[in-house]
Image (cartoon, rainbow, N blue to C red; front, side, top):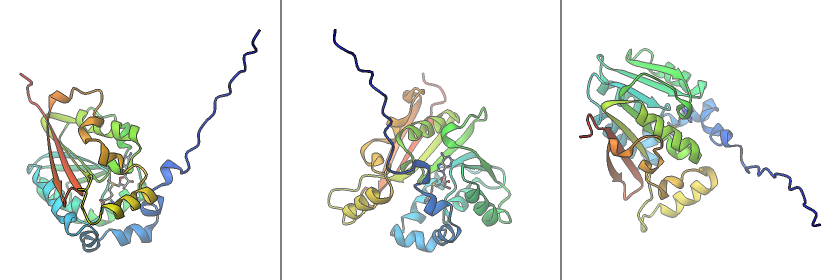
Length: 237
Ligand SMILES: C[S@@+](CC[C@H](N)C(=O)[O-])C[C@H]1O[C@@H](n2cnc3c(N)ncnc32)[C@H](O)[C@@H]1O
């Protein structure tokens, strides 16, 4: 009789600790304070930091109840908080206490419509529904399953008629002068970023009927960045 060998299950360990990939940026005060500069961000992005921040704010109506997933650097949060105004609210969730504290220090005396909460956008469970959910430059940092959870949670948190806004990297056109540099940077430091080059953000939506949402997509900077919106239909029929 043939002897059956019991195969032991092999666990493949990732070469990097997923949670630690962005430690150098979000857990080191000198570094995150350095990057939290509109001037530097506009320099690095050739002016697109301001353009994209303004473009997100324009998607939101004054008085809206907005949920943002992840703290950001530069002027994105303040552009949005101004737009929302004193009759609206901007709730920002982040799973990193240091980033929440950085934003608290930065905005506490300027805006009383900003609320900061520690929460994981991928595991978000909320009954509260929002007019807008904003996800600015977060998806490219996340492993595939978290991308699915974050996009799905963002859509599920919308009121009927509400709009989710996703801003992120995109696949630059073939002859973009910075394409190879971006690819090299991604392969060295951003292992999950290139997936966002390959797949549309709408394809990460799960457990929701994508036809319940009206999708738009705009690209910027020769395809370097994208803004995708998903508006929840008030009534399907
Ligand atoms: C939103 S991204 C944007 C940073 C980007 N460099 C910028 O300003 O354009 C980074 C933030 O998202 C947070 N973050 C990462 N994963 C998260 C998750 N699963 N839930 C909530 N916040 C998360 C990080 O702690 C960090 O503060």
